[in-house]
Image (cartoon, rainbow, N blue to C red):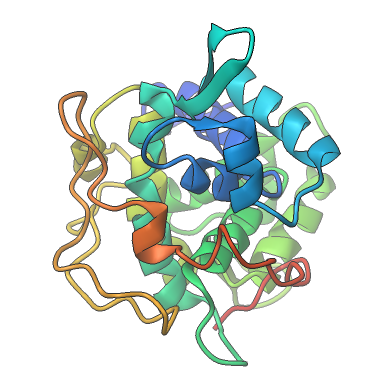
Length: 280
């Protein structure tokens, strides 16, 4: 992607965030990471927490998460193998409440509040649309951009009209606005509200502390971390006293899956929402 007139290192930044999203968005990956919160688990213990997954589904998921550096397999002896977070995987967990905070403000919930895990999965689906990250970066940097100009930046080697399918999808998802055919594109309130999410993902993918999200060259935001508020997406959860702090190598996440996602590891999840997800 060419990034003329955009902040330095934008290419690498977008590429890192896109790669990070590709690691965590595939179905069940977040649920597996949450189920592994706490002490390392034997395969049978993890499978019991994710009882809706067949053995043929869980094993390749664990392998891919190990390959991504988010989960580590420890072989204590031939009969004792455990799985747990790597430091990298554990550092990802504090970003999940940031995603929930955004989802609870901007995603529609026509049938009532959604469990937090479903809020996360639906939000990640929106962000992993093809070219979504690149388009969002450009619109945040330039405020209003024509489709042709966007195409020159995001897909310079392709026919410029190819920009319109991903743009139409982002408009349908509620992340981008336009006044009509031939008019410039800009971020919607929901798209602009992604600042804390994308800033945190950028910091994590670059190996920086999550506090660095507040100083991101594009997505810096006065509230890089979620403000104290009750968690309303699941009636079964107890509200935490404060938002989770950014994790450092000396600290552990402020919450575990039993705090906000206690139902996620034991109950079979509902069917995935339609592509595009609910939106306000």
